[in-house]
Image (tube, rainbow, N blue to C red; front, side):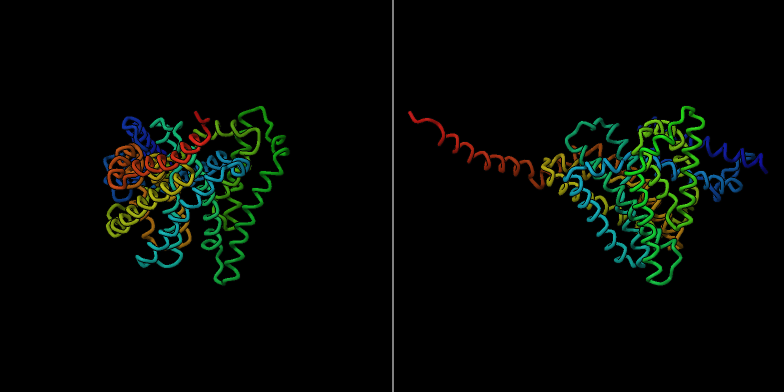
Length: 421
């Protein structure tokens, strides 16, 4: 049995590697390919001699590897943004992020209630509709060489704000869904424990850095990585014991380590594990989905996709204009942050872990698949989309008119101040 287990895991890794090579050749996001790959194989797949694509014996270990992938994804995310960086974030980022999250979350709530979901399922739907894919957005911005664009700082700022919202949302929903309380007081207590646990890590990040710097001053990479990984898995497991999502424990620990002078060293050591186990996370998610069960979720997901594209574009336009950017740059924001991926799946998994409706899994699969494919395409074609919409809304003409109106008083002032002949 052990031999079969190793062979099955090896077969899964070969398939994942093939998907990665294909994504690299196509210069496309690997996330939708891995989910599709997982959906194609699995319990319903055929068996070809010794090649068993059903992954019956190895399904549990692949799922466990996927859980590890989530921990590394969230841990790395925590390393990427620090408490200091949050404090230094500009007003435009705070305003833009608030507009983005508020609009998407509100429309998500309306959509959930409209299609007849109960309150908890509606909250999960609103949450997963509100979180963009950091991995896809960052990759697309780099691939299209837009890092120096005027709107890119705001895009990354909104993504950062969105990540903070995700941490808060998961903490609160962990208390509601995993706390095990049936009374109102018990539920409030669970939520307060989750928030208190989160605040504790923020305090450690700000006050405990000198001590952590000394403790992590380890010359041997072997010992250093053992200490880091031991901390990661222990904190994630302890978080789950407190009914806080293990992924949030990983994110909070990353946030703490991001304040230390060892952040870059930790990042360099973690990236290969993040990529390896992260790929297995998306594969295992697809593996758990029966493609024949997607029928009932397709129209539901399509409605959410249309709503997300519209709300993201509107939020991007409002945020960009509030920050003083042009209509073109503002439209780029809305079309860039529309991608959905790893975090929407994490939100859905929390709902499933809390015993919510099973339709959340196929709904999220279709929703993420479509936007993981459409997102990069919309970003790539943002220029053409802007020119098409500009013909309808005449944004450039309005900007020219506004500039002309504001320039008239300046000319009059110059004429009045000029010396007479």
